[in-house]
Length: 69
Image 1: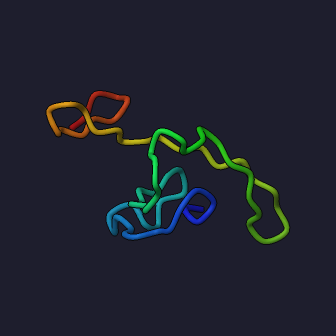
Image 2 (image 1 turned 90 degrees about the vertical axis):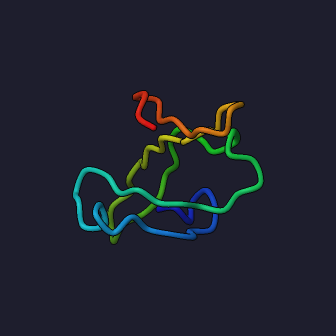
């Protein structure tokens, strides 16, 4: 699913086998252009995948939309 929006660089092993989400680090030129959703296939099913970005702040800290650092 990370390949829909960039090149997968790293997978968070603690979330790798979860059913509701997985954390991935992707390589892309501009993180602000990663879409909120992307459509992909999983077997015979068409699924809309949602993405939550970690956009760096001016100070260099990275925050999730939920406020976690």
